Amino acid sequence: MKGGPHPFTGIEPMEAKLVDALPSDAGWQYEPKWDGFRAIASRSGGHVELMSKSGKSLARYFPEIVVALLGTEADDYVVDGELILPIDGVLSFDALQARLHPAESRIKRLSAETPAHLMLFDCLAVGGDLLIDRPLAERRKALELFHAAEGTATILLSPHAPDLAGAQAWLAASGGALDGVIAKPLGGPYRAGERAMLKVKQHRAADCVVGGFRRTKDGKLVASLLLLKYMSDDRVAARPWLAIYGIGPHADFDDVHRDFVEAYSVEQGDRILIRPDGYIAAVVARDQTRILEDYLRGVGIV
Image: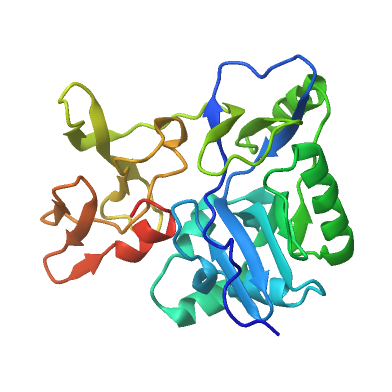
């Protein structure tokens, strides 16, 4: 049995370009846009990997997904999907972020209390057959066959619609729970690292304070922001607290609400340190330093 990573473990995911409206002509497949962590899942023998869209491993943060993938009969595949985590029937991005913690004991506890799921929507390789040059219609058929054999309560298959009416129905019925809808060309190959799909998104808003910004190299545009958001907490009656959010220079502004990195509450007198490249380096409290590296790495910002 093979023991090393799959040869295509590090493949970049195909991404989507934000548009005002979904295409209505023939030749498209429509799928929900899930509010979670994008992940390329691969298995080669006894080796399983979950890679974020920035190429960082998420495997240690989601041990229940690793166990599920090790439990499949197939042992040679690469699938594209989204790590999602439902809480009381609603997907919780905050609960996913809580997994990005350096303490293994906390990750183990959370994986048992609030297990995540892997929602599959593309098949890149299976049984030694590389599928990225095949049209989506063929890849989808391979994915459905894979899921029919290996699907569980943890490994799920994303639905799809052949027409625009089905996609619009998803948005109308979601009540804001769905992040948006993706349109994929049925005849197109898997264009790794390219924005070869189209997406529309649910509009969300938040009241924030801009704590700092970094310009682009030419000085004409804003490359990244540091946003501060006041949040209420019934357990802390004496004062409101701040959640810190960092948006890296490579973040897609269209996905800005999903790339927020919730850090720690900040008291008066704390300082926020910003690295020269614009990333949050740490929150320095009066009594300790709390490094955010694992949080930022886990969501693909560093």
